[in-house]
Each structure stands twice: as C-alpha cells, then as structure tokens.
Length: 331
Image (tube, rainbow, N blue to C red; front, side, top):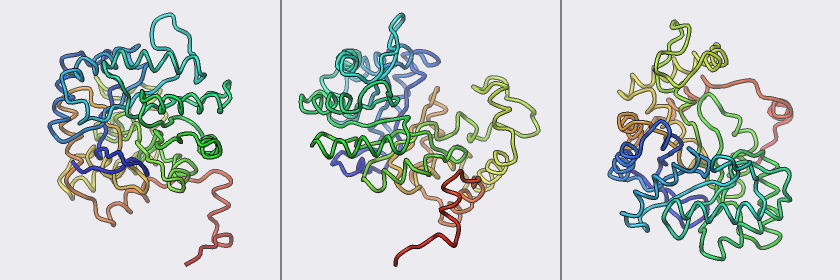
C-alpha cells in the first residue's frame, strides 16, 4: 500500500485509512481485531476513531489490540467533542472538555500519545482561540503529535488556520470531511482551503454509506435486506444523478475488472488534495474488498468520466464565479 505525507507534515500515512466507527456496536472485539490485523498485514498504518464511537468502546477495542503492537509503526487518529459515555452531556471543544477528553482517550487507547487529534465538530459556543490554544498546549506536552478538524465550513477552517498562524500555535494539518462521488460539497471551499494551506484530507464515508458499493439497484424500489440503508435514506438518494453515477461506476468496474466499491474508493484516492479515504469495514470480507482499491490506478479518461457523471448544479456564488465571462486565469 502506497504511503503519502499528511499535508506538509513529515508524517507518512497509507493511502487507505481504517475507520472504526462500528467497533463495539456492529463489530465485536474479536472481529475488530481480525480486521485491524488484516489491514496492517496489507500494509496499512493509519487507524481513525473517536471518543464517541460506541460510547468509547471503539477506542477501548483499538487499545486492547494496540498494546500488543509496535506503537511507532502506527498512526492513531481520534476525535474529541461530544458524548463519550452514558449520562455525559455533549461538551464541545472548550478547554475543560478537551483536556479531560484527551486523558480519557489516552487511557482507552492504552497509549501515551495520539498521532492526530481532531475536533469532531466546530463548536460555535466556544471561542476558537480557546480551542486552538488548548490543542497547541497538547502538542507542546507531547500527548498529541498533530491536530486536525472535521465537520466545519470553509471559512471556519481558514479562520482557524489564520489564528494559529498569527499566534504561533500549531495549526490544523488535516481535515476530515464527508467526500465521495455522490457527496462533493467539500470541493467548493474546504478542499481548496486545504490545497492552498497544505493541509491533508482524509475523507469519511467514501462509499456514501454503501451506495457506491454496487449493492443498490434502481429496480429494487427500496434498500436490500440486511443493508445499513433505510427507506428515508433510499428516498433521499433515489434520483437520476445517483443512478447515473452508479451506472458509470459499474461500467468502469467492468473495464478494470474491479468491484464498484474499489472503483469508487480509487476515485477518491486519486482526487486532487486527497490524502486517504477512510474505509469503514464491518467485516473482514468488506475489508478485503476495500483493500482491492490499492495497487492500481484509474486512467485520466476514467477519472474524468466518473467525475462528469457526478456533476451537479453549483450553489451561489460558485455558479456565478464559474461563468466564462468571469473566469480569468494566468498562465
């Protein structure tokens, strides 16, 4: 599995990151450990979790596995923001919660440092200076190596980077956005900020909650039995654009003799600014399919065909700014 630098840092990560949101809920500990073992055996090094996943059980499952490994070979990423256990209120990104949260995560993960510590959701009730100065102190203390963010707007990300630069604090080096062939809003502002500022991008839900895995059919009229989708999710995706994208994914998959999931993941891997998609396998079989997205490449023509199939109307002001009469580029 190829490795890439995480943004402009010296930290290298593999082109597929293992997501663990289902560990402790849909995936039991023994199965989770098998999934991690097989991911690492395939060359993977980056594991992503969060304090809220399965009320902390995801971190605990990773920790029970991690204590038996060579810690320096792995990149452990987790997130802080909300409820990490029964009866604990959502606590945001204030200093008190972050300082308590990092200690809780270190304990559950059974490690003395976290490679990438991310704010899970932007906290509009806490001054950004409070959040960023606290994260900077964690890096200085050695408990955290790098910091990042997830689920915020482009202006919020840019403001955070600018504040850190102005105060000499450690900056966000990575963004974790929703991004896949069906969900491309991150291209409007978030990914351009990352490209301009040299931040890495690790995308969550690269298969759009299973929609890009090839298991959904327009003729079915509803989600297949045993899928994670419900009727409301089906109704939200049951449109011409979704089926056009799925047809394009299946066509390319036939050409390259890969599965639709592998093609959809490969598209994310090869997009500008992307560091790695986060694969959230619930079973070893799903993991094996996802790992098949490495070791090969889509052609430029195939990438363009998939991207064009996933085109959608742009919102204001992006629709205005892309009109030919307003586009001025140098070189």
